[in-house]
Amino acid sequence: MSREAPGDADMVSDEELTELLADAEGITPEEIERDAAELDIAPPEEATVVDE
Image (cartoon, rainbow, N blue to C red; front, side, top):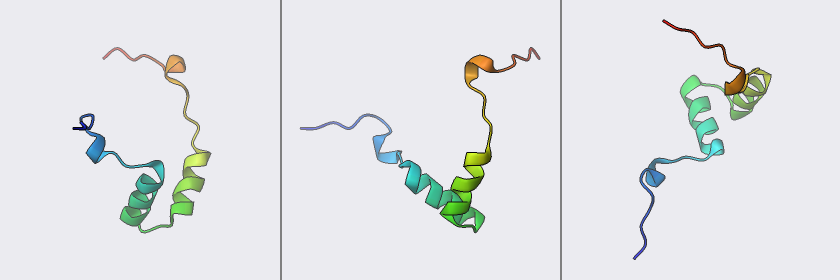
């Protein structure tokens, strides 16, 4: 008897997510990947902490 980890059934691969986003936005998966490559995301340890 095998057991799946919670949430495994809901997980999608990077490729599937790219395709879903592209479909939702009406663009190609290649455009999603190109735009994502242009993002400059700093690692969490370099984030600015804001106290609200």
